[in-house]
Image (cartoon, rainbow, N blue to C red; front, side):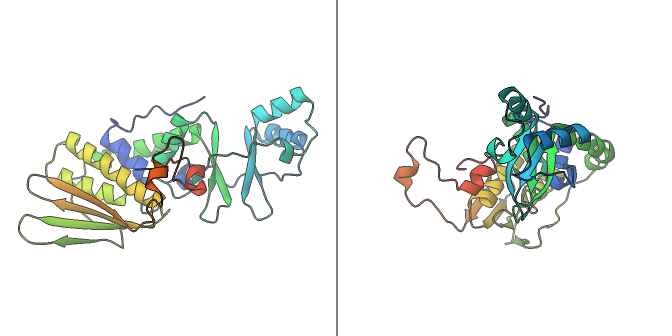
Length: 281
């Protein structure tokens, strides 16, 4: 299975910047071919052959994703003698999906973590809007790197509050407090706080290694708020010799902490698990 040879723990800053700034919708193939549950496996096989594709999402009348049929499913249908059966009987129903507003870094993580050749992409209404393959991600990264690396590497740094719900706040002296609000499942804003604080640190002369470590820790906290909470605040307290990151969310919390500590139990909702996340921090 094709993977994407990028280690997000030690990749160059320019690559990480692209992974956070580009979104899934920037790399996905769209519009896409879909099939209905009543279409036969034979019909789907012919669609794949005609269009030179290896997977077709199965959607309901309202455009929602209900399954996917891959080349492997077609081969199994030919071997098993059910190629004339409707897709509803043999499609894969436990499908890992991406949201179109997720940062491109999610694509890299998904392809390197799961052994799937493609991931359907959904909008905020859970309707299928595209499909992503590893080749889509790699080709987009190559184009973006050729266009952006020189510009990114020459940036001098400096802070700009890109999040409209954010407001930098100075409390006097050498102490500076910067806040960004997060919203549940709003991947459009996710990562902006971490990107802004990295620019500020680079502009202040902080070493690339320390800046990278802070950026990764901040991004993990930020994404956890977006995925698992009702929203919250990412707060950065910048001091002359240190930086404090406070991640404060507004719930919902864990109703039964003792039960959550038992093996095999997950506090992640069905929606969160469908997006490939565990229970988070």
